[in-house]
Image (cartoon, rainbow, N blue to C red):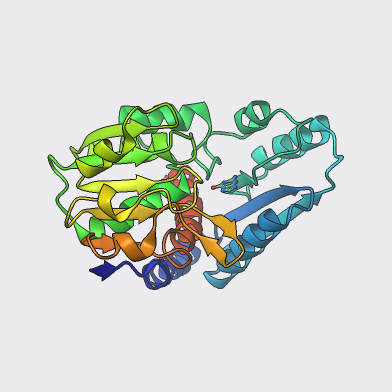
Amino acid sequence: MILIDGKKEAAELRGKLKKEVLALKEKYNKVPGLTVILIGDMTPSQIYVRNKEKSANEIGLNSEVIRYPETVDEKTVLQKINELNNDDSVSGILVQLPLPKHINKQKVIESISHEKDVDGLHPMNVGNLSSGYQGSIPCTPLGCYLLIKKIEPNLTGKKAVMIGRSNLNGKAMAQLLLQEDCTVTITHSKTKDLKSECLAADVIVAAVGIKQLVKGDWVKKDAIVIDVGINKTDKGIVGDVAFDEVSKVAKALTPVPGGVGPMTIACLLKNTIECFKRKMN
Ligand code: GUN
C-alpha cells in the first residue's frame, strides 16, 4: 500500500511556487499578495489561518490577515472586501469559513471579485470549472486531484465516487475528475447503498465529516482512497476513512493528518499566484 505523503508533496509544491514567486518578482518587480479575512475566534479557523499566513510568507508572497470580532456587521466586511477588490497589491482574497450566523455567506462570497477569489467559490469560478474554462479551483479538491494524479496519471474510464456534495469539496472534486474522463458518482446522506457505490470505485474521495465511515469491506482491492475528513475524537483527529482496515485493501491512501491538509494550503498559494499571473497577462 502506498501511504500518500501529503506533507512531502505539499513541501515539493511549495518549493516550486517559491521559485515561481522569485521569477515573477524578477519579471514584474512585485510579488503576489494574499489577504485572508478571519471573523471571530473559532479555534480551528485561527489555526488554519495562521498556517496559511505562515506558508504564504515562506514562499515570498505578501500576506495579510484582517481580523474582526464575532460581532462585526456585514456591511463592514463587505466594505473591506470592496476595498481589497480595488487594491492592486492584493492578488487573492479569502474569507475564512464558517461565518457567524448574522453574516450572509453567499453575499460575502459573491462580493469578492471572481478574479481574486482564491477559494474558487464565486459562482463565476464554479461556472468556469464546470465549463472547463480558466479560473480558480477550490483548494482542497485541487490538492486531492494532484495527489491522485501522482499515483495514477491516467484516470480515463476510472470509476470515481465522491462521498459528500459540498461546494467546497464534493462538487468541485467531481468536476475535476470528470475532466479527467472518470465516470463520476456523487453520493450524499440520502444515497441508498453507499457501501455498494464505494465497492465499485477505483477512486474514492471521502469528504463528509463522519468519522471512519468508509470501512475496509467498502473498498475494492487496489482502489485509491483520499480522506478529506477532519473529525475530533478523544484520541485525536481522525478522518472519514477507517485507516487501519482500508490500508489493507487500498492501493494508495492518505493519512489524517498529513494527507490532504498540507496540500490544501499549498494549493491556496498556487491559486494566489495564478490570479496574479492572469491579471498580469
Ligand atoms: N474553512 C475550512 N476550509 C476552508 C476553505 O477551504 N476555504 C475557506 N474560505 N474557509 C474554509
